[in-house]
Length: 116
Length: 110
Image (cartoon, rainbow over all chains, first blue to last red):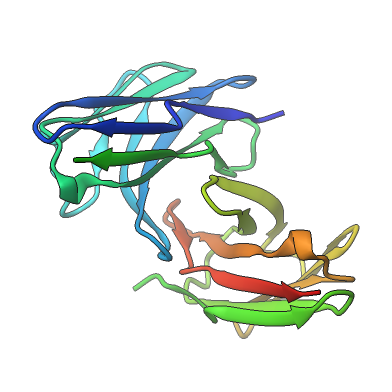
């Protein structure tokens, strides 16, 4: 149980384009979803927290207009990187928690974004 | 502030035990977690422990918690090459945030 998927697993795009990453909880209702960014050989950097049906809470230093987060249902959250630049290239990981899951975050497999 | 610290590297021989250590700062933490990350993958929850427990065992994994010293450890018995990965310690703080350590890279030599 508690499986989280992400799509796509890998994406390459041109500078200036927008990229959407989906995060789905497959077998539970995710009341809260988290988006992280991970640089090579480094820990996770929390970007934002989203609760279903409400606006995401962004961490300090994360641009809301650049990283658009939508959590429209209890099983789906999306992260859209707008006007992507090479410095946005990174590994993006989502996680989710749900009721009865002891606050444990269950992680998706990650999405490798490369901006040319 | 809230912080979780881990050593960055650990190297062991196949068949030996591995012990990965972690310290945290929030004395009102509720849960503490260990996650495993293999190359190019997300984080896999290995185990967690409630803050009112001092030990939890799950097959080859033993978690020890010293709440007084705010010290958490993960012991992997009979370490295998497949255990090579990055191990993240995390705490669920009293303020309902989950703080991750920087990760310990475990190398298992055959």
